[in-house]
Each structure stands twice: as C-alpha cells, then as structure tokens.
Image 1 (cartoon, rainbow, N blue to C red):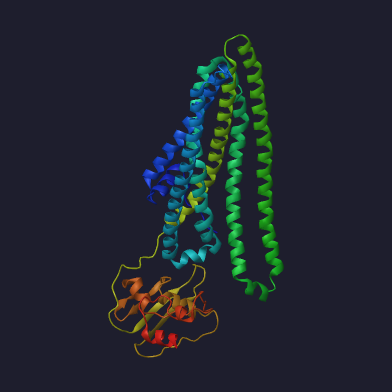
Image 2: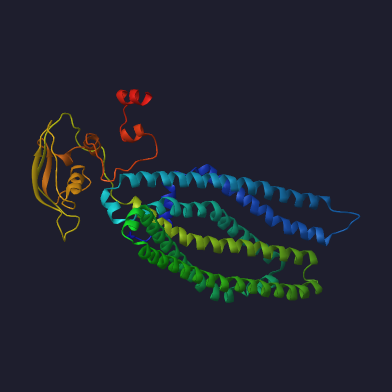
Length: 449
C-alpha cells in the first residue's frame, strides 16, 4: 500500500493543471460566456417586476417582453456553448495528465511495483484523474458563476428592499452553526471513502490476476473473507455518508422554508404599507431562488474540491518519484564477456538472496545457471537487467561496469523471457518481436507464408 508523503493543497492542484498546458483562451472564453449567462439571468427578475407592476392586457409593454425573451436566449445559448467549451478544456487537461502519468509509470523502477499494488497504479490513472476532470468540467464553472450570481443577487436585493433583505439573511448565522461542522465531517468521510475504495480496487486486481494461485491453494474462502471485510468497510463509510446527507437535506429544506415564511410575512407587510410593489416582491422571490441554487453549487464544489485534493495528493506522489534514466550513459559497441564479481543482494536487509556470487560468461559461449527453486536465479537475471542494483560487488561487461551503459543500450542487447512467459494480445509475430523497433525480414517472410 502506498504512503502519501506530503499533503496537497489548492496550489498543488493549480500547478498540476498548469503543467498540462491547458488552452487558456478557450478556458477564459468559457468563463466569459458563463458570466454572461449569469448576468442575463440576473436581469430577468428585474424585467419581470416591471412587467408585473405595469401589466395591462390592452397595452402590453413589448419592450420589456422582448428584453425578457432576449435574456432567456442569451442565457440558453451562452450557457450551452460555455458547457461544451469547458468540457473540451477538461478533456484536454485530463488527457495530458494521463499521458504524463502513463509515461511516468512506465519509467518508474521495478522497486516501485514491488512495493505497490497494481490496482493502486490503475486507480491513479483512471479514478483520481477522473475526479480532477469532474471538478473542472462539472463544478468549477458552477462555483465561479455561483459566486457572481449570489453576489449580484444580494446587491440587487438590497436595492429592492434592504429591510426585507436583512430579515432574510438573519437566518444565515444560525445556518452556519450547523452547516460548517457537518461540511467538515462530510469532507473527512469523503477522503476515507476514496482511500478505502482505492485499496479495495487494488485488492480485487491482485486476487483476480492471481486466480490460479488462489484456486491451487484452496484460498477461495480466505479471499472471500478478505474481500467481504473490504466491502463491509465501504458499506460502513457509505452509511456514514448517508447519515450526513440525511441530516443535511432536511436541514437545508427547513432553512429554505423558514426564509420563505419570513419573506412572505414581512414582505406582505412591506407591500401593504406601500414600501415596495408586488412586482418587487415577486422579483425578491426569484432572486431568492437564484441565491439558493448557486449556493448549492458552491457547497457541492467545496465537497468535490476536498475529494480532488485527495486525488491530487496521490497523483503528485507518483509524479514526484525518481524514475529510471534510459538514455544517460555509454552505448555498447561490441560483444564482450559478462563478469560478476562478489555480488551480494537482498530485497531487504533481513535476508540476502545472493551472497558473494562470482562468475564469467564469455562471449560466444553458452552459460547455464542451474539451481533449485528460490536459489536466486531470477534475482540474478534481474540484477543483470539492472532492475535492481547489487548491495555489494559489481557486474561488468568487459572492463566497464554495466551501470555506466545507458539502460536503453544495455537492455536492447538482452533477450528476456520471464518464468510465466506472458503473452500480449496480438499476433505471434508481434509477441516474438515485442520491444524491437526495426523490421526483421526473415520473420516477415515466414509470417506471409
């Protein structure tokens, strides 16, 4: 299981996104259209209040009606275009991030894969990058336009009737006393759920990929219990998330009802006294809902933001790891003998797999390494491939230590067949020539036959 070495914050997220070189013009244009959509929406209640206060079937105010229709059209068209452009920007960012992450995973040393579950790496590539994409495409625009919409609506409400606005907002301090601690608890549960889901996915990947070993070892019951434990943990976290939602939803609904009752009661008094018109009261109600909906978007954004920060931590952890350098070093120009001199190696400090191994494999000769299972044959070849470095001793090719050659040049001259001999999807030729860039005419001729 991987360990996150440093906590991420919003600056890390911004740096991660900027590293993907997002299309800034399209992103800015999308935000402009979103703002235009919000401004058009804010103008509709004011136009509607004028239409209500001066309503006359025989003498309709066509200018106001045209203004309302125009505002609706701007809101619909600009909003639709903005959503599409932002979706393109988000897909560009996530594709670039996945390319960078995939390149990094391929360049990481074998020691990384020894200490990390395969499912963890797969989860970084798919789930965590998907979380970042969702924040950009689904939540960020709603957050920005929500702030503009709420701010604009509040300013207009104070101009419409500031006493009624103060009465409406008197409920906010009381609401915050409940919503802030619930929001913090929700963020903690979200992080735990994300982490447990990734661990469960990694466990499933490991078990299913080694299903032959599971069956040969009669370990079905053991793995069933282990998987059931993971499912139960996710179930418990899901229940906690459900409890938060069960508290949050009726609490928000109750607050909305209280605000509506206050507006209807005090607003009715203001209208009856002539302090405000019926049209202004109607506009007040519309602006109230234009505050409630964006506030919901803002709350959702911060919930998703906490989840995205957790995903960012895991992605940055991988991107910050030291990778293999394939090109640095000398090229191999001629055949030579392979010399192991006093090589000692262990996967950890407690036990050595190889101890003081020395031999010479001469060029042109056949050298076979024979030994019982677990004696270190695979480990020896892993050292020759430079998957690991000897803790003592050295491996030379001629008079040159093998770590002085570039990894690309060194591994290109080695033919490697693992114990399980995995086969990739494709033809036999593609499997036989896997990793070779150049054409092999003899193989191609046989393939045509």
